[in-house]
Length: 303
Length: 307
Image 1: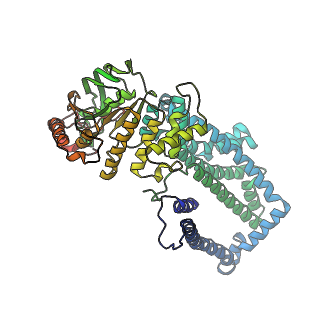
Image 2: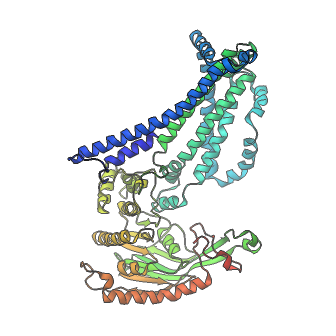
C-alpha cells in the first residue's frame, strides 16, 4: 500500500509527467505540488476507507468474544471461554507482575537465535547448492526427505539428544525455519533470467562478480519470501516446543495456565502469541518490501 | 588494410537435446542430434564499419553474434578481433540484446555504469562519482538526460533500449554487437532509434555488427548487408549499400538506390526464407536446446507452437 502511495506521489512530481486533470494552478510547480497533494489525499482517503472495513472485521470479532460468552453461552462454557474484558484484565495483571514480559523475552530469545541460525545456514547452503549442480544432485533427495518430515515429529529426538534446555528449543526452531529459507534461496538463484546472465557475461563480469551483482540481487525477493515463511514457522514450532517441555516461554505460559485452571491467563498467553506473530510478519513484510522496491507492482504506472 | 573483425572458416555445431514434444511423441524424440548452425563462414568487418546481417530464422545469426561476443566458442575455424582470437567476453566488445537485458534492481544510471565497476583498462578504479558522471554523459548521448534515477520498469521499451545502448557504450568498446535490438519496438520508436544509432555511430566511430530480420532496417543502417543462407548458415552474399547523400533530411527509404538495393537483399533472402520454412527450421536457444526443433517426422504437430 505505502509503496503504491509513494510511487503515485513520485509520478506526480516527475518532470515528464503532464499535470493531471483537475489542477488549475497557474504556476507549474504549484500545480505539480497540488496534484501531488491531491493524489496523496485521495490515497489517504482510499486507505482510510479500506481501513474502516478492515477494522470493522476485527471489531465484530472482539464484540462477539465479549458478548458471546455472556449472553449466548451457558455458564459452564463461560468458564472455558471468558469474555474479552476478563482476558484483558488477566493480561494486565500478568503485565504488571512482569510475568508476561519474562515469558515473552524467553520466547523471543529462542526464536531470534534459532531463526538467525537458520537464515545464515539456509542462505549460504542454498547459494552453494544452486551454484554447484553436483552438490544439488547429492543433497536434493536428502533434503526432500527432511523437508517432508514435520519438524514437530522430530521434537522428541531433539529433546533426547539436547535435553529439555534452551539448546533443543533453539535447534528445533532453527530446523523448522531452515527449509523455507533454503528452498527459496535455491529457487531464487535458479530462476534468475538467463538473459541477464548472458548480458552480465558479455559485460565481462567474472563468476564472482556475476554472482554478487546479478544473481544475488535478482534472487533477493524470492529469498525474502522464504524468510517470511520461516518467521511464521519458527514461532509456530517454538510455541509447540515450549508447550511440551519448558520452564518459561509463551507456550509454557499457555499450557501452565490451562493446567492450573487459570483460563483467562491462558487466553492472555494466546493473545500475546497472535500479537507476536503479527508483529514478526509485519516486520518481515516491511523488510521484504524494502529490498524488493525495484519489482514492478502489478499494473503499476509503467508505460 | 586489416580487418577489425575476421571470421575464418567458422563452423558451429550444437548437440541438440530435442525439446519436449507433445506427449505422444516420446519415443524417438530423445536422441540427441547434431545441428550445424554455422558452416565454414568467412567474413571480414572493417574498422569503423556498420555491417548489418540478415538471414532467415535459424540461420545462425545469434550464434554468430555469440561467437563474436565470446559467449561461445566455434567448433572449428577462428574468430579474430584486431587479429587476436576471441577467447571470451571482453571490454573491447559490447552486446545489445533484443530484450534489453537491463538489471531491474538498478536505476538507469547504475545500469549504465555496471561495466565501469571494477578496474578500467589503465588498472584504475573509478570512484562512484566518476561512474555516475560517465553514466549521465552516456545517457545524455542516447537522449535520456534526466532519467538517471528511474528504474527500468518505469521506462518505456524504447527508453530501455536506449539505456541498454548507453550501457554498452559506457565502457568504450571498439565493437558494438547488436542482436535485433529494435525488433520489440513499435515502428515509430524503431525509426527514431535507427536514426539515433546512425548519429551515435558517426559520432563515436564504432564498428557495429547489427543483426536484424528487417530488410529495410538492414539496408537503411548498414554500409554493407551480409545475407546468410538457411541452415546451415553460410555467407550467401554481401551487398554493398551505396546510397548517395545519406546525411540529408530526405526520406532515404524512397530513394531509387535504396529501393533497388532493398529489392536485391529481398530477393536474396526470399529464397532462403522459403528453404528454411520448408525445412521447418527453428531458433536454437543460447543454451543449445531447440525446443521447437523436431528431429523425427511429423512436424505438423509443432507448427509455430512457441515461435
